[in-house]
Image 1: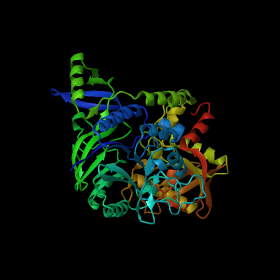
Image 2: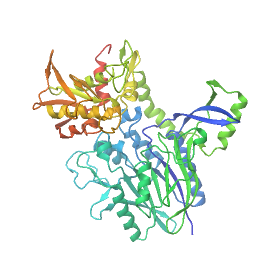
Image 3: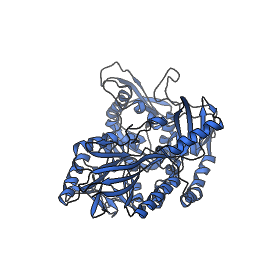
Image 4: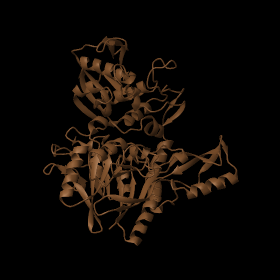
Length: 559
C-alpha cells in the first residue's frame, strides 16, 4: 500500500516578506541570455500553498507546510518589528511546524519567547535542553505548550504526530547543536548533539510502531547528509541553514545540488533555498515501512511575470522574449502564482509604510564617501573608514550609562561602504548593520584584552591556523595597538594604548577595563574566545544599528 502526502516547505526566509530580485542565465539556440526577475515573497508563497492544499483536499490526501528555520533577521522588516511581523505573517501561511534556527537567537531568548507566544503553530527544537532554564527570568521558553523541545525524562526529542492514512507521520525538529558558537542563546539554554538526539528519538518511535519519520532540521546540507548517514530509519529530511537548493538548477545558472532528487543512504533530503524566493512543492509516496518510494514535483523559484531579459547588457527583441517566455512556461525550475491578495494587503498597508518611512528618514549626511574594507589594504592602510565610527556609536551608548574605556567591533559585522550625501535609517539598518544583534558592556582584564587583539587578527589572517575569515579583524574606538604577524604566538601585539581624555595610556595587564561589543563578538566567535572570560555583562538595550542611528543623528555631518 502507498501512503501519499503533499509537502510544501520553505527555509531561511529571513524576513523577506516582499519579493527579491534574482538573476538567471539561460541558453537558447546557442545564445546566452540574462533574466532579471522578482521572485517569491510571502504573498506568492501563500498563493502556492493554498493551491497545493486545494489539490490535496480534492484528492483527499493529507498536506503539510513546514519551515526549516531562520525566519528572523535579513531585512528592514525585522529591524523594525523584531519578529512580531514574522509571527503574524507566518500565522497567515498556517504552517504545521517550524524548526527554530540559529538566527532566531541573535537577540537572545526573549524575542524567541515572544515569537513562540504569538505563533499559532508548532515550534520544534527537539535537541534544545531547557532543564536548567531560569523560570524566574522574563519570558522563559519552557512554559510554551507549542514548543517541542528535549524531553529530559525520556531523553528524546518531543515530536509532532500527523495522520497519514492508517499510519502516523512523526515530525522531529532538530536545530544546530553548536548554537552557542553561531548564535546568541541565553546561557541557561543548552543544545544537545543532533545525531544522538535524533537516533534516540527514531528508536523510540520505531518501538511505538511509527515508521514514517520526517526530520525538520536546521543543520545545513552537510549536517543533513551526516544525519542521514548516521541514523537509519529516517524517511526524509527537510532542511535549512545552508541556503541549499535541492534539484538541478544548472540550466538557469543557479547553484544547487544538481540532482533532481537528492537521496543519501536511502533518505530523501530536501531544502528550498533562501529569502522566500523559492518553495518546495512535492507529492510524496511512502510504503508501509516508511520509505519514500515516489517524489513528484520539487523546488522552484516563484517568478513574477514582469521579468526583464537582456544579452550583453541590451534588451532582447520581442521575438526572443517570446521564446524565453515559452521556455519559462515549460520549465519545472520556476513556478507562476499570483499574489495572495489578503497577504499582500496586510504587508502593504500595515508594515510597508513604516519601512518606506525609514527609507525617507535622513539621519545625517556625509561630505565624502566612507570606504569599508575588512582589513587594511594598499588603498586603505588603516583599514575600514566605517567600522571605527560604528565603534564610536557603541561607545557613546555604553558611556552614557557608565564610564567606558573602549569599544570593539569585528569587521564582518559592517557590511557596506557609504556613499557621500544623505544617510538614511534604511541604509543603516538594512545594509550597513543589517544584523539585529545587541550591544553589551563588560569588564575584561588587560591580559585578556591583549589576547583578544592577537587571536582575532590571527584568525583573520590565518596566522598559525586556518581561521574563519577576515570578518574577525578587530576595530576599536579609544584603543590602538601594533601587531607583528611574524612574531611568536603570544608576542605579536605590542604598544597597546587606551585614550583617556587627551592622553594615550599604556595597557596594564593586571588592570580591568570596561569595554562594549556586540553580543556576537562577546560570545567568543571567530577568534574572540578570550572574551568568554569577561564578566559583569550588561545588555545596553540597544542593537548595533540602534546605537549607530543614535550616534549619527547627533552629527549634522558625519564626516
